[in-house]
Length: 213
Image 1 (tube, rainbow, N blue to C red):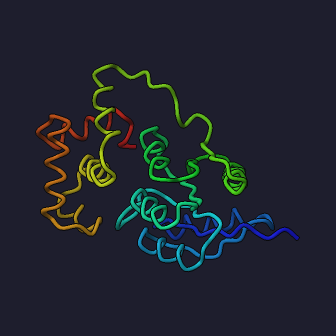
Image 2: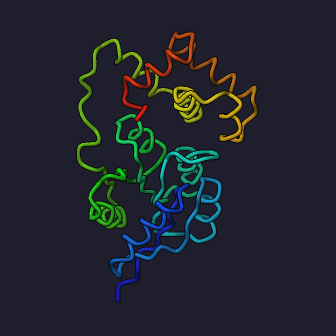
């Protein structure tokens, strides 16, 4: 009998993890060996359990999904990570792949897509759900913003996303486990790079790129 693919599920919602587990349990080729609710837990479990693939969300408390991917890949360049996220926008897909993920699918994809992605990644392929990365036909006024956002560091991108959601600097500092002054400095850098003065402007830019859904 072929050895099962060993999976760790990472999502901050227990109900979502339970749904993943039930979906993957329908066959006899995949085994969920552990679960984690945030990135810090995922890193520890990955290093201890050495799963074949880590299946994880991006939006989580603590260091967040993107930083989790980056830290795991720093420790294991051969890590196989599949992002399973509610975010379907290209900016998230590109960020995840640049951080080191091997695949990206959305939570509203057909159930068989998850299994298909896992098998593809186990075979050494990258797997991106069809239609997620499209040609950018946005106006030139947005193209400049896009170039700036793509060039953000992982931390800048996380802070930008959370600021655009209306979260305070104190709240972001708590969720990312950073100092208040550090987050405030990031916020200043972000506004300077985008040449805006208010959080409303940041939210409008994020909305233009579909990042508010």
